[in-house]
Image (cartoon, rainbow, N blue to C red; front, side, top):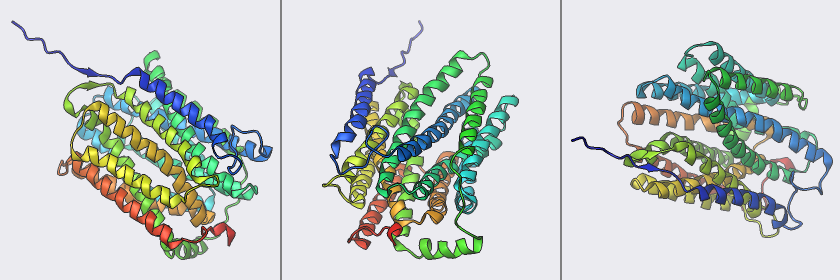
Length: 449
């Protein structure tokens, strides 16, 4: 007599998506009235200059296109790894190639962006996506090595080039400095929203195309061409960093010689490391109890939580009762560390894990625009790309070491890797507290010097 073993399938409650959607809509439309007359205005407002509104909308459109391409590749990449029947070792190798490329490319691309102009580097971002799409379109089984290099370079550029380009143009056109805060949180909000939309679109393409490779690759090629066209026709740019010798002298004086920027760099590095560890380990952590889980149904809730978190930023940092950004970040980093520590300590029930991870991303949604605001206050625009690339490189090195030791050789467990992320976040909180102590009196904003 045969024994039938029933598999247990866990699915999130559909009401969660309704709740998150309502929260996102409520938070973003409530914001224009939350800070009374002491706030700056956003694209959802009508009482601002048409020039700034046009500038902000044009940038967010281009940034949204770039976010869609990044999101589509994340879905297509996972699908291809599964459809090609790659082994666990080969999947780890793809991560190894990607993080190794990002480790060495991040500082170089950051400096290059400052020297030749952020618009040109943003064009390189589009070209990389275009090449990756063509490579996959005309290759029966594209090389994991080449694909990982293309997409890793593009993702590295995406982390800093568009933001730096926007900040530089914002100052060049003479818009108010405090209005940058709105654009920062809208960047996080729109990026998360379009990542959700790109997942839905990618799943539709894969499910409704007879050739699973041609349709996604062709879509990427079209989007990369459109994005390239809009970036080309965007604002003109004149690099202001001068020669490499002048740039190196300024970088040493303003970046290496300023303790505040060292603290800010460390905080950015710790956040990047913890997010990288999370995205590598969240799926194995969720399925650790043996139940079948549709991970694609959980992923949107993380991004929706990040959208909600981004709308908290203007509520806390604008208005008559606004808090110092450093104070908010101290608490946010501590909360992040506590959330990860629950996971590092022991495996939890899937529903509880989903709640913890959603709260984690809500905090990330708040931290990202907060760090962007601090960069604007402390880092000269001419050195911003190099500073951001410098903070990404050590984080990629730490993630690469974690992939090799934890994923390939299995010398370190998943809980230990999460614990390292917790330690980094706590150190980041200490850095933010120290940064506050170094600038207790009115904000030291280099723009006002």
